[in-house]
Every structure is written in C-alpha cells, then in structure tokens.
Length: 392
Figure 1 (cartoon, rainbow, N blue to C red):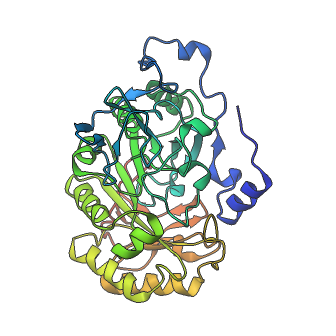
Figure 2 (figure 1 turned 120 degrees about the vertical axis):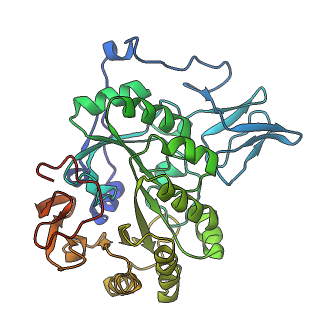
Figure 3 (figure 1 turned 45 degrees about the horizontal axis):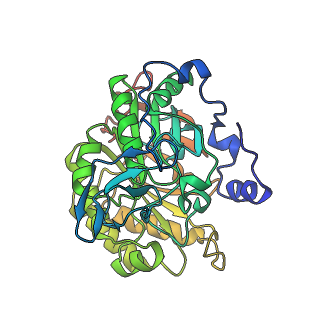
C-alpha cells in the first residue's frame, strides 16, 4: 500500500530535490498473491521466537563473550536476544539472524541518476529497495526515519529476492539498487537478491557508506555491477564524532571495489563546520588521485539542516564550487555538484576538449554526446559503462 508523505517529509524531500515526482514512482502492491505463491520464491522458513522472515547470517562466530557479527567493523558482540547496532541482526540460540530479510520499507522505481550514478547506464531506470537500519549513526542523516530504526518499527512490504527480480523486470528497470538506508545492514537480503538478478542479466547497484569487512565485501561484489560509496570525510575523528564509524574501513572498501573491477563513483556530503575545510578536501582528493581513482566520478553534495544538525546552515554554493576546483586541480577528471538546482556542474564535459557531453537537469538527461564510450567531438574515451544506451 502506498504510504502518504507527511507535510514535513514532503517539504524535506522537496528541499532535497527528491520529491516523489523526481524520485520516480513509489511501487505499491508490489506483487500479486499468485506471484507470492510461485515455487520460484525461496522464502526462509519462520524461526520460532524471531520476528517475521528471519534468516541465519553466514558471517558470525561464537565467542566466550557472545556471538560476534563479522559483517561490518562494528564487530557487535551479542548475547541471547540482543540486537546489533545496525538493528538488523539478533542472536537466537547462539546463532546470528537477520530480521531484515524480505522486509523492505521503501520500494521505488528511480532514474539511475538519483543514486547518484552519472557514468553508468544514463537515463535508465532502477528498481530501488531498502529496509530499515544502518551500520552508522550519522548526525546529519538525510533518511534517519528509516536508517535509525529497526525493521520491527517500519511499515514494510513482504518482498523476497525472487519477487524483487520479477518486479524489476515488470517495471522495465535495467538494474536493482540497494539504497536509501544501508545495504550492508541488510546484507543477506542484498546478497541473495543480487545473485538472482545477475542470473537474469539485471545489473546490481550498491549505494552504500562502505562500512563493511573485506570478506563479506568480496563475496558480495562478485554480483555488483556499480557502486556509489559515500566518503563522509577524511578524518578519523570526524568519522567517529559525526558518523559513529571510522575512516580506514571506507578507504579499504574503495580499494577493494576498484581492485575487483566494479564501476565506482564517490559521494562527499559537505557539512558546514564539519567537512567543509578546503584542507580536508585536498587531503581526500590527493588520496583518490594517488590511489588511481582519477577516472572515478566524484559528487560533492549540498547539506540540508536535518535530523540532529538542524542548527547548521545549508552548504554555500561557493564552498561546493571551491571543493570542485580543488578536486579538478588535483587531477580528478569528473567532478559534480549535487543538491543545487539549476547548476551546470551536474553536466558531464570531456576532460580533453571540454565540450558538453551529457546535459542533465535534476535526474533527467537532456542530451548525450557520448558515442561508442568516447567523446563524439574529439574521440577521448570517457570512463564509465554506456552499453545500454542506444548507439553508445
């Protein structure tokens, strides 16, 4: 059933440029009763004493102090009945279970540009899902109503991996995006869905904070085609105070994704007073350049005063533009500014001849001058995946 936005939610989404008309359509009644009963749907059997569609996680060990989750660097150690920091995992009989499996609280059909992914199948549609929960606890979270909640407290759909794939096809989407909250928190659901989608030739998009351990990341990335990782700052202290996490695991994730050959884009939300210092931006882009990420699109996003930082101002456009200049001077080839309506910095230009290649307005592509993965004016190869675009 379609959930009606409250006035506060509508104003918040409108301010961010992601109101329903821009987001894409909310998918309601996402599958029929017949589809639910199809033998192709392998639903996990109910576990006595656990909530709804629980499934055992493959990443945990039993220690003398309790069961330790091995999915993310939080390394939660849980006793019987305790929930993890991401609110998606719980211990029952010395086993770790996810309670997010098949329980998305958000289902949308979105333009892929919203992720944001600008160099991967532009102007295509992505079937986007999320459950409640997150591995971090950002004070500036834009989706705190779901990211800082348990699946027990949100209004959910019953939508299992096979159903997600079928609905993706029915809605003429070329990809499935694991997004909005944090797909690492609902790892098992993400993994199983991505594996089925890959078998059907559907692309998988990981839109994540990157806070994950290497083993589960390498296992998952085999089925991921593109990722956008939010690099929230370039300071361990700020990661701990602002986000409740750590920087180094994110850097490790970026390196692993690159090593595995998955298309990668990076997002940096510039929060006034926290992550807006030019010196930090310079450190960040210097690290990206020195580690071979010059072809990786970098998105600087404007902060909106939400959640626990409503006392802060919007990020000034001048600060975003300065960050972009720093990144370009450091050697990054494709640098964008987001959450600023009307800016030309959401367009793609050729890094050699500087001609306009992709013109965007919001999440819409107005023109595309990339031909056979290259600038049609000078022939320079443009990094990305353009294979589903006619003539590209």
